[in-house]
Structures are given as C-alpha cells and as structure tokens.
Image (cartoon, rainbow, N blue to C red; front, side, top):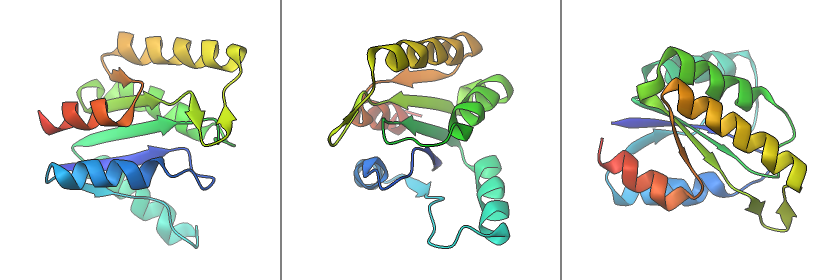
Length: 132
C-alpha cells in the first residue's frame, strides 16, 4: 500500500504529521515536495500519483495555489475509490474565512458525490487508510 501526499505546501507541516501516522500503520507514502521543483520532479510526481494505491489531498489555509483542488476533483471523477480529501480549517496561526470554508465544503460534497472520501482531521483519514 502506498499513499500519494498531495495538497497544501507553503511550509505546512501536515505532511510530517501524516507521514508519522502512516508509518505507525506500516503504510508507505510518496511525498512530492522537493527543494528543486523542476521538470524531472514534476514527471516523477505524475508517475507516483498514478501508481499509488491512495491519492490523498490535504487542503489547509496555508494553500497559495489552487491546482490541488483541481487534482482532487479530477481524481474523484477518474478513480473515486482511491481518492481522499482532508480539509483542515486551521494550520498554525492561519484559519480559513467563513466564506472560503463554505466553498471548500462544497468541494468536499462534490468529491463525496463522485465517490471519494472526505475527512476533517489527519488521524481519522490515516485510520481509514489503514483499513484498506
């Protein structure tokens, strides 16, 4: 079992926490964050995203870009049984506004309607992944 760890970058520490949970359950993962985001890293990420058993996307208020939202919706359409979205309302001192949170909940509902799974904390998602 291998989990693709997509989603918010921007020095968010959610990946570090999730990697600990997954390691505790004996689950392998791919962390796409690298120091030098070049063409080779991009190709490797796409390859890993395709071959991983679970594509997990965590969105936090530290998010700067929107590509992860597109990825999770795309994956929930193409491979819903492998897609997990985690929405974290807070990330250190950052917090989603009421309006942004409402919009993200609509994305979560879309992912669910497509057959993907949605969680609002890392631990619950890790427990679910451990059951797969």
